[in-house]
Length: 475
Image (cartoon, rainbow, N blue to C red; front, side, top):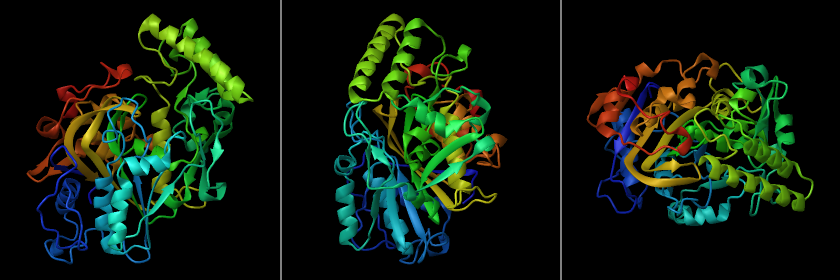
């Protein structure tokens, strides 16, 4: 597949129903969902194994996968509840999209098919599998002899509430590979002696150990690094901190513990941070109280300082209408750097914790945008019918197209813009102007794709007026 090509398949904006299309290549008994029909169309567009198309021998992934090969499918399984109350269809990768991909990769008879993600620590993984419909999908696959291993990539969890203690999972440190990108990290330019890296509900002292000048560590699930092929299957949504969550951002779930993932830096722009634009007394007080809560020695202290921080934030919101301490705005200059670090590790990382100069595994991105998420994503998105699936081998190219199809300007979003910079570690060896969108009607440029296929999504409050598309920006 050409990394400069992004393949897009339009389909009905709902998941239920049975399609009448004939799939001679699949194992008997496959459920012909709209997602399966859409994926089949995408695979036809790519031209993979075109000489066998329409026969029982068509095996589009056969050149990448096969007996002796290891496969990991990485969905977006962020949480078991949508804080907006609008359900899971716009929150997590739909089970039918994962099932469709499993149907096709199973034709290659790989050694293993693993589906896994590191959800947020408060996610009830068992509930997620049930509520998302995955258990039902998996039972159908198993009944036809297609075996899938499910992995929860988290090292620790929290049962309930922001101030609960962490609990160790069945995984251990040996299930991960630690990388230290040092001076080569995208975070290094913003790593002063007191960088103030933060994740909102986590101890800043732990983050200071994993990230600082010439020290940028990540804890990556070993399964991904030992895989021959990784299929990244994100849900397309807007994102409060990154602007967009899609093929690039979905790699955050490769890391096993939040204390390795800087999301913002403490303080305002003027003081060297990027949590918010302008300082005021309530914001600074809220940050100090939050740090005390996250670093407290006992659960009682955590709850006391946590509630005090919450009161400060509520008072601040009454004062200016928008107040959080998560870096949820267009000036967040940290989260995109962390995401590009993770992308570089997935592409070039070896199981011994070092980076190669050559890509180490095949990576395919299949994005679920049948029902997308708009508004205050990633944890409180509201459903919007986008009605498409996309596929590509370059996450940078995929998300440039995704942003355009969401009515956004990818050049105004640091994550999608900087994925094409030389400092990103060669994630894209071409420029956005080289990207073409391939549909069943032919090949078009990104601007034309936005006009023909795009929608205007409502962006998070902190991004309004700062990332929407302008006609000339897509040319």
